[in-house]
Length: 136
Image (cartoon, rainbow, N blue to C red; front, side):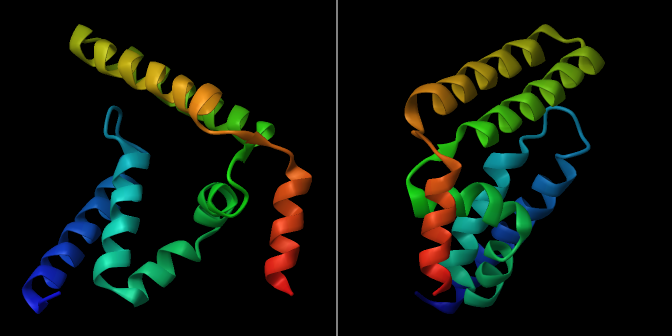
């Protein structure tokens, strides 16, 4: 990969990361997709930045468990849905625009499909077992 495309991907990764962090506080700004995009672009453009983002507690708790064990424990899924629906509900209440409600509704349906159908549910013991094997 040439230097210009690496720098361009790194710049877009940082923009996505910053916007994802801002999205925690700003209604309707998509946090998770932006941070996943940042992780992907960091992996392609900067090993150091990728190592940083995958070492964060949030990444280890939610993404690493999925990558290592092939699913997400039920308790984690419930937490993800509770936080997501709370934030989307607050966003809908504050913004009060039908187009925003439609977008949030689509996001909610997609998130339900993802958590209930697409991503397998695993036991917390399985995640702990896989992490223990990797720690050895």
